Image 1 (tube, rainbow, N blue to C red):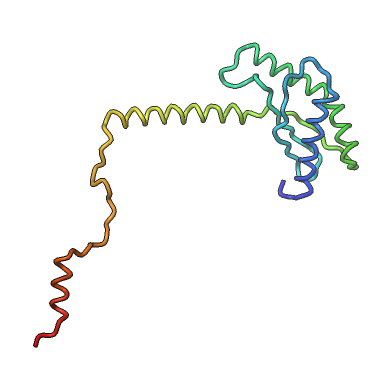
Image 2 (cartoon, rainbow, N blue to C red):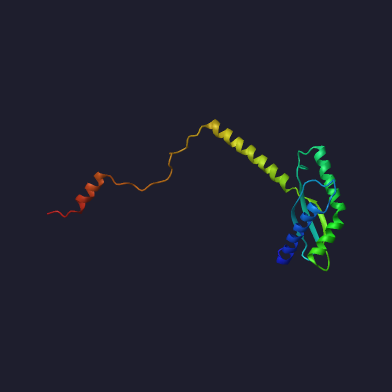
Length: 164
């Protein structure tokens, strides 16, 4: 999808489908759906619409949430014809792309990664608390230029003076 035309078509399809789901599709099985991404093939004949459902799905989902996700998927499949005809009408293309609805697992994956990172952070803090917070070397490990003291200045001044 590197072609700018294909990218514009995908963005437009995302807006059209989201507006249609909000305004015209009145299916009671449809949950709180968010269209997260649309990917269109290079020949613009097929569009994959990625969506998420608020409060449904995920690895720790209950049976009720999974049932809601399945009902939303069924509602999107039943509304596919209406959505495709509206996409074709608003895009004004000769051939309308077929629509395929795919549940987007990205939010669940991001949530899992956040949980893993939080556990790792907690373990790191526990290990740091056990061993104490003292540095292995000096408090400031960087070398600094040697500062000349007043005695060194007097010795250098005596060397510069010519002897009489």
